Each structure stands twice: as C-alpha cells, then as structure tokens.
Image (cartoon, rainbow, N blue to C red; front, top):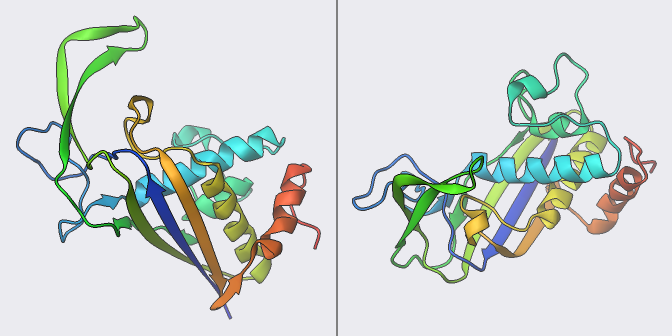
Length: 221
C-alpha cells in the first residue's frame, strides 16, 4: 500500500507579485500568470523552484552533497539521487510530489503596470532602448493557496519529503520575478501536512531537521 502525502501551502505576500504567464495583455511586455479561468496564479513550476532552491541552500550549508538546479548538467545522474532530487526530482527522475499552482484566495483587484529597464550585469549599466513593462498584482498584501500531493512506498520517505518542503518554505523570503525590485516579498507562509489523512505536527518533522543540521542523511528516530 502506498503512503499518500498531502501538503497545503498558504502564503501571504506583502508586496506586489509577478510571474510571467503565457497570455498577452495590451500595454505589458510581460503579462501576469493566470490559469484557464483567468485567476491569478503562482505557477507550480515557480512554487517548486522556490522550494527547491531554498532546500539546496539549506542542505548545502549543513554540509550535505546536493546538486545545483535547474541546469540538467548540474543535477544528479543515475540512480544515486541527492536529498533534493529525491523529493523534487530531476529531468531523469520525476518528483514523487505533484506540485500545483498556488491560486489567489484574496479578492482580485485591478492589476498594475510597472516599467523597468534591462540591466547588463557585466557592464553594470542599462542597455540602450531596453524599456519594458510588467503587469503585477496591486501593491498590497495578497493571499495564495496551493495543494501538493505525492505517493511514497514507505512512511519514512514521505515524512522526509514533508520535512524538506516545510523547511524550505520557512526559509523563503521572496517568490516570483523582480525580487530585487521589491516584488513577491513573503510576509507569512504556513505549511500543513497530512500522511494518509492523518495530520503531521512539527514534532513529527523535527527529528529530520535536527539530523540534517547535524550533517546526517537520515533522521534517527
């Protein structure tokens, strides 16, 4: 019997947010991401990338050998996966967790159009004639919710995945595009976890966090 993991993520952003979507909007070079129903979303790929990057930084700081995404050439090859790839997957190994879009749960208001200038990181100067316009949410707090689910062969692997996602979420400070321009700053993020419909508490996850901080791969519990 497979172990069913459910992870609910609730975010509150304190600044305007942007992630580029596939739709076009008059007056914006980069339109805000929306789902098929036209609702604002934080795409699953953005949420997953945000969590993965935080997990990589934390585990590497604690001395764990983890690969560096998202470039495929820098990620695990073969069957021996690092702790991050075990949870978030890589081009050769799908993630056991299905990440979903985060949907805006706060009332949607009018979006805003912000201007920007492309900057050369090498020259540390603006490119000539590179003005662009970005659609963002209004500059006020917004709330978002995502539900992620996965199937695991044993409860320890499921708990380890839950612990890594929860830890990565806590570490995050901003999400989406334009973070250096003040977009997507996180005011609050909460993670609720259930294994086979039974809620997991921080006490259930703490042994993993403690073991990882001590440089161990597996929690001794």
